[in-house]
Image 1 (cartoon, rainbow, N blue to C red):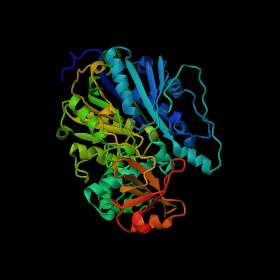
Image 2 (image 1 turned 120 degrees about the vertical axis):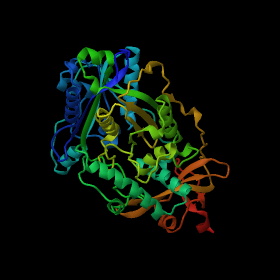
Image 3 (image 1 turned 60 degrees about the vertical axis):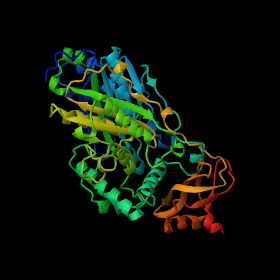
Image 4 (image 1 turned 60 degrees about the horizontal axis):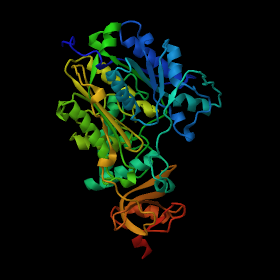
Length: 507
């Protein structure tokens, strides 16, 4: 390839690093992130890489993303500066992202635009989790010191906007898994599969992810699982077992470096290491209750297709794919809309996915980007797609990459999709009655404990309702026969809480 005529302000990925600790240690997440960053610096080749970094952006730790995940061992008050101190960098800008699994790609898109506009020339993106170390120390009643204090300026992006309605939160939707299971269940109903058939299909797909993870030296969890192993694990809901979902008990870190072509030339970074951005896009979904099609995310498809369109690439032209895989429906939200088979016949992961490679908080897709950089170096023509999502299929990002040159000016390329283009369903504050369009039965210690339904009134308004704490009869009724399409009676709201019963059981 002739890269001599590539404009100096063209962004290229030039380095990547990954770290995993399979056994518990006392290392902090910032220790792991700094090691991955140092590996990414070394991976670039060239000279004086760390000194040339003008921006370090760190993906937000789980422990800083919500009070319930707070770490008792202290924290860095400036995570990008922790990395800078370790690798000998002196960045002008330090960014600490919002929560969300979309953030690695969001930060990449932001950096590409800044490089194209000439505002930045070399950006280090990094993230990590040491949740396994934290939990191990807590179980052993150990005290660790992970506190770091710096005075340098920090652009802390905070926690962002809420990703759920108050009604959703008040009616049992307190964990991401409950949202994903409503999406999953609605997809099962659309496909007209019974519970056993749908779970079997998920198991067949997920075992192919586990096989990839088993061969990845940066996987947290060694060994491959069969579909039977996956489906035979402890139940979380009527569809999910604990091995069908992201595993956050990991010690993992990843980092990538994006710079301008001009800076890469100046530092002597070999052209063999350059990976170009061909198409990127991002956008935010509506709240789950408001989505016209609750069995998927329309925005996920729009974002992936926008990235492919900008890259002038068809799905059939992709050689490598990594779809965010915190839950099965996160994979099918992309594969269904891109026409990719979800039976495992086409590889949909490069790492092995969040349930088997590991789910390092908000930073998983940084590992997918690192894999992309390394794999594309072996081919001049291959093209790779990476997708990511945050929240409950709420915040989406996608990128298409190749070693083939791309001269798009990202500062002038429209990459954001506004959710004003989506159909928004109204919410019923006091529905009275309605029809079940999705549901979940949640388990506690292996026992069915609560049912939650996504319903729709005769007037087309949506609502989330749950069973009363003492109402085990309704919970069992939802397990014993297909409830989708059945009528429910909903008691008047109390502080946004809506308790339902099946209409037929009240007769």
